[in-house]
Length: 257
Image 1: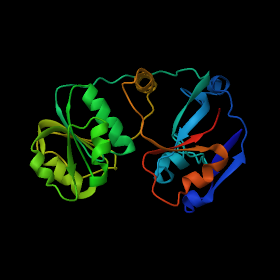
Image 2: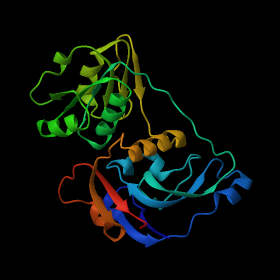
Image 3: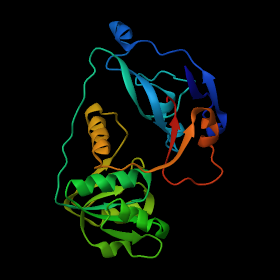
Image 4: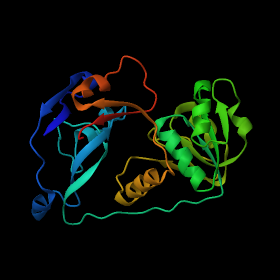
């Protein structure tokens, strides 16, 4: 099979190459030894690349702490499952409605998804970002927009939940806006920001088959829109990972017709 690989963490995207790699071992066979318990083999149709994933530990070591270079980036994928190992299961997590949600980076790839899901759950959504992202955030369902360069964030008042993709000072200021019993969810890594009488969740990507299936169904039903900025052919993948200008939306590599 063909794959984008990177062997030098220090080189980053500049060290990526499109090469031939062996087909992955069938999970059902590997599971006999327990090596791939709960794993699946997927024929990838498309993959999304997150800009900082080459800095994630999971890119370079597996769940048992073993080196996994040469690493194949693209933790987000869509395709067809071709093999299952023993013990593969899915989980589901419920979500509450009727609350106010502040979504930072609401015009971005992650923020636009969070905005739509919060709206469908019945929340009142306030998006934030740069002025240029105002209309995009509103188009994805934000009912208000705060320009972080010129508007006063604290004028929003109290909210039940903050979804943070920015971190730093914004996360600290946001923590002070959360009502009693509310939650700060951040995807920027561990943070010292804590609501006075609430909860902080340092979110880490965890694959959840049930949740992913639900999202796919929502997209098919038209209830959820993707925020795709660039779709590149597999042969152009290396260049797509090293753009010469900022691309709005998710970059997708089309792997299989």
